[in-house]
Length: 454
Image (cartoon, rainbow, N blue to C red; front, side, top):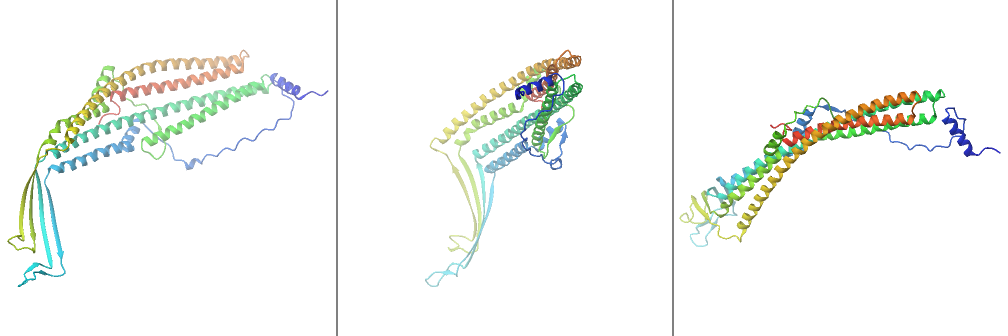
């Protein structure tokens, strides 16, 4: 009786495990792999620019739309202040008119005196001088407070932008390290694959060892490609932050200033950080609104002076002269407005209290940020030391396991596990190094030392 297909499969598997070539068998039909989309040509993609951390931060502060809009807001509030100032400064307007009739207008009674000539012209100047107007003056002072608020708002925008640039730049450094680790793991796996292939060809190894080693090579290669995809995304993110139309990469040493002490960092954060100063300015502006409530209850005195000239008047010169002037003093006293001013006064008092409460919260958050950053730095340093020691031991484990495998004292799967643990340990070191640098950046930002003040 001829052997069944299951028996033939068992024979093939046994021969493969024994290290001997298997007899030729009909291979099952394989499905065609899906067609992959071809990537664009390298020449179609823009070149990658490398920059230092200081240069990246400087370019972002100068070219990022958020920073530019924050600076433009200062100019806008300055223009609003100029508009508010115009309310308590004199104004001068000129007026001119020309009238053309179908003919002279005369009275119907004899001797038909002229009532209005065919051509009439008139010109005048109107000078308005606010002698006592309190509300426009206080509005101008409040607009100046808004300018100062916009300045600190721009400073806070720069701080947040510098933090985002610093984190992206440091992540790029860490990603380069991850790619390097994955590439070296692939080289190690290929060396192990070469050894297993030679063993199998010489009749000392098994096809299973070769398949496992090749699988590890392909897995490492896939991780390299995935890491490069993440690198491309980080480059694009940094390019957007610095205002570039192409990807930007990190280059150079980490030129961060040394970390401040805990006491100095806490003091500087609570007193000098831009978000704290911004909230302090909001408190000042709100208090000024409450302080200047008196302006809503004061009268206004305005003087108007108007010289005029007209070529012809429909009335006799004794009634309306052809040239002259008039002056007016107008006094306006607010008596009752339906309770509008009282409601505004209560609203401003509530807003002032809200700003003070917000200031307490911002100061508390600043101190908390410093404490968290200090703790983060301490733990990140300890984690980095442990990760480096683990990577050293994992590398030593790879060497010992490989020697044992070559001597026949261990299996192929142990070598692959040791390589994976070594690769993961090296990646953990890169992550720990990035965490330590990020912790330093967080401490500098929390204390207000990054970016450097102008």
